[in-house]
Amino acid sequence: MKMFLAIILAAGTSSRLGFNKLTVFIDGESVIRRSVTPFLMAEIDRILVVTGNDSENVKEQLEGLPVSFIYNPCYKKGMSSSIKTVTPFLEGSEAVLFHLGDKPFVSSHSIKTVLNTFRAGKAKIVLPRFDGKTGHPVMISTKLLEDEIGNLHGDRGLREVIEKYKQDVVFIEGDTGNLFDIDTIQVLDQLRERGYTIEENKR
Image (tube, rainbow, N blue to C red; front, side, top):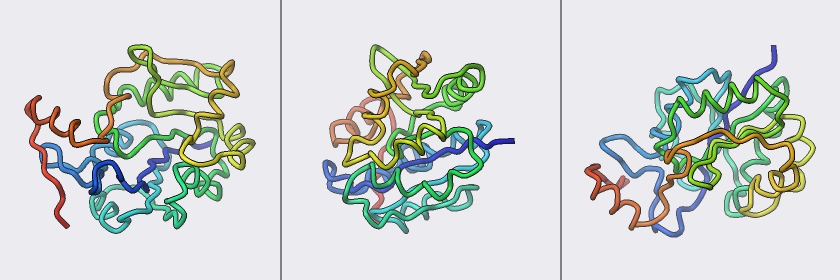
């Protein structure tokens, strides 16, 4: 039986914030842990977390969770470099779910919907869409990924692949959790205004 993999991209430099957004705590739990945990409740065979910047601290935030880590030494070259690091782990898989480590409000329900949609049809790519915008996680067939992974460059990640194969994309109805990411101080301030307790990891 072929596997389904989840890849959590957690190697970025958080340049717009000035500190590692993945280790910010929201109501006592780090952004990266909140981003990974919903995948544990979905039918995923293996979860891989790609680290780079502040790698040890990110790994510490996920202590005790059944995930594996891949270190990307070229993380400064952008998201595509992190995607390419998963190549040796694709064997035996049918499809891969890609998620960003700074999207802490993704729900296990939306993850399961993406998975079930892929299983039910012949889609090569499944994307959540909410309010006219596409979000994460992105599910892509392993064969398509292997065909295109060498063409990925910079921070565009899978966007060029999605555009190239747009006729093969199936959209599911998502929610705000598929779109919401932690990128700026203003976003953290908005969360505080909504009643969340926000703490920066001082390590």
